[in-house]
Length: 180
Image (cartoon, rainbow, N blue to C red; front, side, top):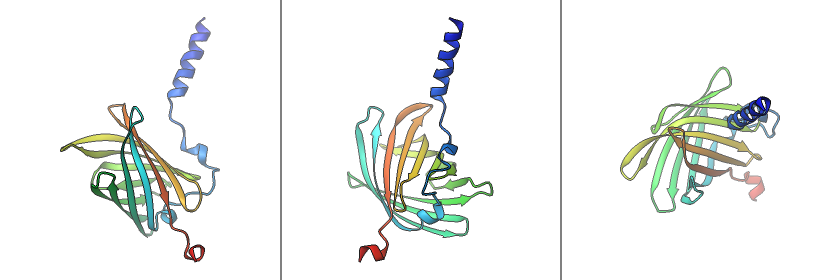
């Protein structure tokens, strides 16, 4: 009986652990942030509350530019209710290959790990809701599917309580030769 309890507890703990970015090391195409987030991009997304209801839909126009290992990502959001928002990220590649990111509404720094086709960001966002501002935690995963499309899934929580999920699809424009 004691062994059964130990196995059950181990399985329970294993199920609660976060998966590792290293599991994507061999996945292709390899994501290079300074290549993918360079120039003009678009994204479409939605926020679902913890019960799965779609609460907000949005479009994002993005412009990325780079100088060495430092990039600027200018995001311009248009929500389905007509409101707009802008977030400008400064992204910095670290010597160990990790990434750091800052933006006006990010508390401290976003910490990012990159492996294969995946990027894992963790950060705290100052979220404005009905005139109040809340600090929420983001656990953000991005997966490059091909040279044009990246999917993004971010879990949002407060004090460890799940608030909902943001889903985004990024798209780079077709090369000019493919459009003609």
